[in-house]
Image (spheres, rainbow, N blue to C red):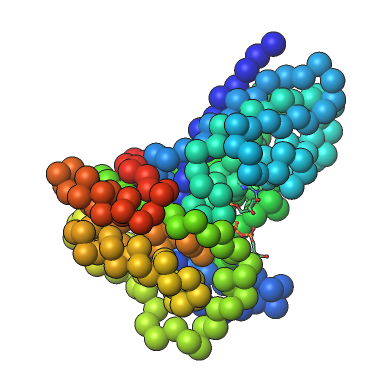
Amino acid sequence: MSKIYEKAPAKINLVLDVLRKREDGFHEVEMIMTMVDLADRLEMEELPRDQILLSSQAGFIPLDEKNLAFQAARLLKERYGVRRGVYIHLDKQIPVAAGLAGGSSDAAAALKGLNRLWNLGLPTEELEALGAELGSDVPFCIRGGTALARGRGEKLETVPRPPQCWVILAKPPINVSTADVYGKFRVGDVKEHPSIPQMLDALSRQSFQDVCASLGNVLENVTLHRYPEVRQIKDCMIKSGADGVLMSGSGPTVFGLVAKEAKVSRVYNALRGFCKEVYVARMLT
Ligand SMILES: C[C@@](CO)(OP(=O)(O)O)[C@H](O)COP(=O)(O)OP(=O)(O)OC[C@H]1O[C@@H](n2ccc(N)nc2=O)[C@H](O)[C@@H]1O
Ligand SMILES: Nc1ncnc2c1ncn2[C@@H]1O[C@H](COP(=O)(O)OP(=O)(O)O)[C@@H](O)[C@H]1O
C-alpha cells in the first residue's frame, strides 16, 4: 500500500491591505504573501475501507470534519466520486490560529497529496479553485512561492520572491480569530495604506532594505489595540535589531526579518525573555 508525504509550510503576509467590505461579508484585500520553512508534514496512506481517518501528535486541533485537511479529503471524494479511504497523519509544527495559515496549508497539502494518491490528475488551477471553497488562503498555499493575492485572497499572481533572509516568528499565548479581527476592522480608521507597488518594486530589485521598509498590514491596528502583548513583541523585535518587523495576517504572530546570521540569536534571546513560542525560520525560495 503506497504512502504519500506532503509538506505544508507557513505563510507570512509582507503586505496586507483591505480595500472594502463586500456584500458577501468578506473583505476585498490586496496582499503579498510568501512561504517560510516552518512547516507541518502530512503522511497519507490508503485505507482498505471507504473512510477518512485523521491523527496528529498535537492535542489541540480538531481531528474530525472541523479539520481543514479532513475537509479537503471529503471535498475531493464528493466532487470526483472517489470511493477509497485514506488515513492522514498530521505532524503539526505551525502554531494554531496564529496568522500563519497552518490549517489552510494543511488543506492545500491534503489536496495535492490526495490528487497523487488517488491518481486524479487534476491540474494546479483546479486544485486552487477547489481550495477556495475551503478558505481564502488555501489557493495561495497550493501555489506556494510568493504571490500578490486579490479578491478575498483567491485571485493570485506570482511575483518575485523576497531576497533570502532569516525570519524570526514570535507568537504570544493568545488565539486570535480571523473572523473577529475582520469584524472589528473599519476601512475608515486606516490612516495610511501600505503600498503594493512599492513592495513589488523592492522585490523585483531584490532590495532587502526596501522590502523591510515596505512591510505593512492594516489589520495590525485591530489586533495591537486589543492585545498589548502583540505590540510588546513588536517593540522588542525592533529594539533588539530586527531589520523589518510586522504582524502576519490577523495575528497574533509577529515576524522579524533579519539579514545577518550574527543578529539572529540576539533577537531570539530578547524575545525568549517573555515569549515561549519563538521560531527561527528561513524564507522558502
Ligand atoms: C487574514 C488572512 C491573511 O492572509 O490570514 P490569517 O490571519 O487567517 O492567517 C486571510 O485573509 C484570512 O484567510 P482565511 O483564514 O483562509 O479566511 P477564511 O477561512 O476564508 O475566512 C474566515 C473569516 O474571515 C473573514 N474574512 C476572510 C477573508 C477575507 N478576505 N475577508 C474576510 O472578511 C470572514 O469573516 C470569514 O468568515
Ligand atoms: N489542520 C488544522 N490545523 C490547525 N487548525 C485547524 C486545522 N483545521 C482546522 N483548524 C481550525 O482552524 C482555525 C484557524 O487555524 P489556523 O489555520 O492555524 O490559523 P490562521 O487562520 O490564523 O492562520 C483554528 O481555530 C483551528 O481549530
